[in-house]
Length: 369
Image (cartoon, rainbow, N blue to C red; front, side, top):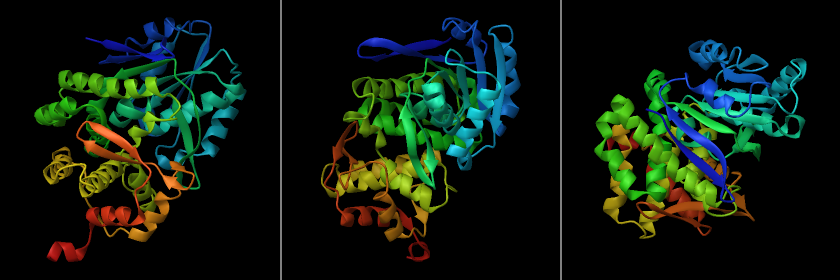
């Protein structure tokens, strides 16, 4: 059975998040957005296209003025301004105007690229998020953050552009490769850690069903996870304050992601960054030692890393300082006051960051210690 929640901006409905178990309801949702006279462009990557591209395009036939599809090569390497330029060219050649709409079918890369293209093509056209990965469903499809990487730096070019709809086919999660599925789970765990301690406990209690991808449990998990992000986004849509709490684990995580040339998945790096941030929180006596070790160890049953081989500590430190979250030369670091309560801190020192990186840095010496 499908569920939905509304995201409000300025206390007025902005868009709905629909939780369902197939693509069959998409035409009806688009009809409610008066898409009958619009041209629609499905934007997706090469891998998702093989799985769902033709199915979604068939569902759109006869439901809009014209339905076309743009496919780009899968992977973070495509998340650039060059891909956005190619989308602009395609839309121009297909005669898209301001009243037409883009549909982002895929993971976080697809959602970010499509959203940025929608924000900037003809100074802004509508778009819909159709996230197919756990990472995108739990995090990147909600809240209107769009953007691309620039010279390897994550999300350095972007804009806020709210979608008209987020349509989640939860059954798509069952087709994900294990590594990709569990990488997305890092963002779900993050939501519990920063804002919802009972949800964090629920995740642990339902560990087996989550790992087995039981659809009933997945639906409850996604509704609860997205509700955390909804509350944060409604309070601070353009990240002037509390929305930065959603960056828990991301400062050091993004640095590791870039240092490793994106060989680690984003969610894997978020898990590593979350362990590092929890470590700093413990050393500052915000968390008890037992809480830190529980947080660290709870990533393991979900197949997420809590250490990584041979990090260049000084390189990671340098990269944290080039992160877009820098503000007046200070890093806005997100720490845990307790499980379910995060705080933004601007006083974390280089020494604390280095100690945290060393905590997650695995070397040959450690293996033989």
